[in-house]
Length: 432
Image 1: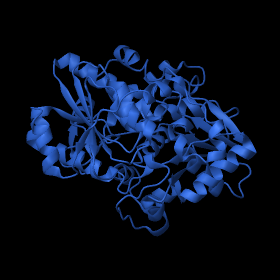
Image 2 (image 1 turned 30 degrees about the horizontal axis):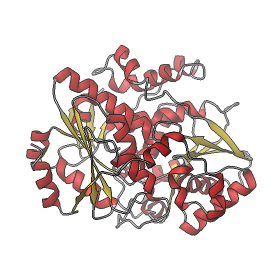
Image 3 (image 1 turned 45 degrees about the vertical axis):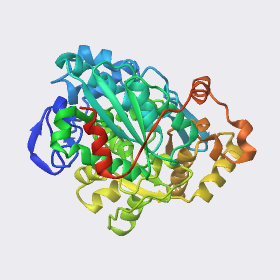
Image 4 (image 1 turned 180 degrees about the horizontal axis):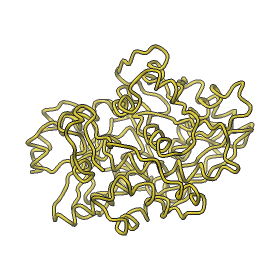
């Protein structure tokens, strides 16, 4: 299979080239020439496959020309080495918990696969790659964990000063080794803009062998389709009408869900659920897509005003009617988020994090009057990562996992960085 930029479909590249480039030279995002439907033989056994076997069958059509299936089977082992439980919450609503990985966030799947893939390519080519990543929270920790100690890689993580939770900050600033954290005096959008500008600098990209660990990178995006398969196969019987609500920031997660649906997973419709950074729900209401500066919320990992993967969504859903057929939008205030976080625990004994609650709210909004439908919302991070944002009377309900406590005891090491491009470019120049 080949891949091409969303902005120039005539230029085809291999999976390896797409991953190593991260962002296409024209500034577009790489997409596959096709999203193949999985064969009947897969669906006849998909509920009985091991997590590793399922991962290989889902990913192989995209990567097999560059990664043989025997090698792919080894690369996916750490990617799906933890559970993805589907938990009944209330009525016809379930939570797909994606926080049981090493950094307690859904980003562990994509970040680990990307790290394994780049390590595989680095060993083949005896070359060092410089990985740039902007984070609004969980991506940084997952990338740091996935890449720590991976030979042939050095990682530079840009995060907004004061824009991530204390536990998220400790998870991305305390590794050392081949992991460097830059604390940017700006927003996540500023961090993302610096990363994208670096990729469009041909000299820097060549001299440093730059690649990305954000969901603009295919090797981050594609494996995120796996937990839709692994989680939803737990529904017994499989419902005729299934809504999946995705708390969304950069929209890589929802894009991966649409890929899973194109591969044959019978999801009826998605909910694009956001906080006050609601450019996509606004688009679904008005037909006008208007990126704008992000605003800070209690669900900070979704504080994105110009989601990168909207460009992939436009490629996948070329008309407004395609969009509205595939998804509905929903956005919620901090007040509503925290209020429902509390009532959900009181009524259902389920403690969600501020992002998962937005997914739950999105489901509740669209499922009104549809008693036959089953709903699943993605719980993308462990509540303990946002303990300081959970209502005070629920603090005792927050259990802090040991692996998170260990991070909280470490010392933060981060380099202050201006959001000014010239300052960031000078920093990268010094790495040559």
